[in-house]
Length: 180
Length: 446
Image (cartoon, rainbow over all chains, first blue to last red; front, top):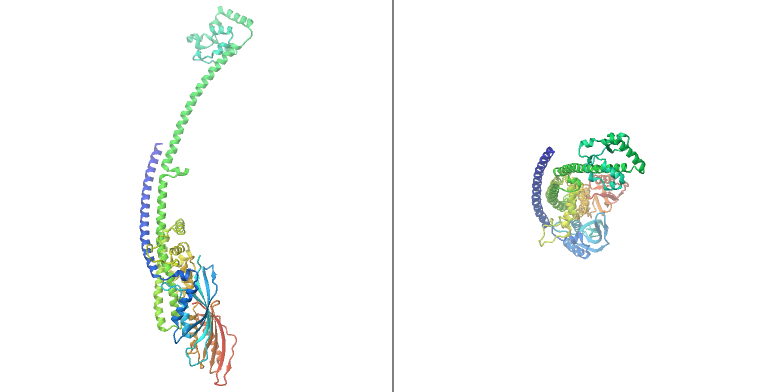
């Protein structure tokens, strides 16, 4: 019985000491983790702020909120005006919108838009380039436009005119995320 | 058989009361108990009647029985008494009862003593067992077996909980850093794609190509830096999240939006950012990074280090497609997967020029070798249809058509062209041969 008590006391004391040591070790680890996490979060927060500062523009209007047709029309006119020149006219004679087509599985919707326009080779190519590159942009966000189909015939009427005008139809989709 | 009663007063009174007068008289002469004798000699003067054939344990005084002078009297008186008195064995039986009572009392005392001894014995062993149990509980913290938590266990549990929380927070700090890079990656990928279109477009001027080449290298370097940073942070977070429990705890904290205030560096700032890149979107990026192994696997350097520009874009599309609930990744994928009519036109222009150096996309010449008079593009089936006219001075017009078909087929952009009908018309005016072709084939998105 005495031996049992002695062994128990030894066991108890050594276990207590080990426990104290492990507690101290864990406490150190916890403190170290907290310090490192705080420093990391602080630097990450600075990086996050720098990233947000580099992103300017109303992303919600273009990618989140319900499609604002009239706002698109006004912006569209500005784009056309910026492309067309006296030598390379670009005249949109018809602009029509169809109902949005949702793609729930991928979380976005498409708004079909049809254009009828009169253009030259250069003005048409410039318009295509503009539509192909607009979209997700950290400094100049705009509606994400996907060209759907384009058909045009090269005019053969006047051989002397190296930059003849022609009419064409262009169908495109405006893509935006579906607002939950 | 003889039972000794220590104290005659303990005899029940009713016993003597129940006795007949004669018996009482006899009792006064012959009490029948050794305790009534003053000495052992007197006791020795008693005889056990049982030994004389009586069915009893009562002793008679030997002198009364053995004394010849009294023998006759005794015998006679006994005989006479037996004759004169009604037959009654009560006195003997009463005495037996008395002895039995004496016996019972003794048994009661003895049993009482035994009971006390048992109580002491069991109390001792009970205390011993209790001491052992309490000792074992004290020394080994066995209370947990009973469903109780010891102070040590409680402290240990609290400390371990604090350790888990600190680990989760540390892992989160790594993932937070990775998520910012992951968001930035979306913009960089789109910028890279736009530059790649300019760079690979055959209609671009040489200066445009050179400028876009530099931009491409710079953006690609930035993307690779972000990918490496994300990979490093993911590795660090996995080192900290060394168990599924911790990972589950982190995901739980993300889902419960516990970290939402942490990932808002613009608190108090006048700058208001859109929902599109708000804090919740960043947390979604973190959730993707921590819970989607397909994503974390793709940040391994071996996945992208040897890819050319086109393959690099395809890799980014594949990576982004694995994200869930990320607006940036959705828009980036849609942007990266857009078809470029300009690039298709450029490729067609490049191939056509190999047959007619003066070719232009909008050709109005009459002295052409090859020209396209109309174009049609349809993204739905990635198809292009072209009305083409070929004119040769020699009759080998079909050869030129076959060469054109092979050239288009060899292009990485076009596929699916198959010309099955060859026709030509000789011109009577200038001796040339002309053919009109309706070419339909597919184009790739990049």
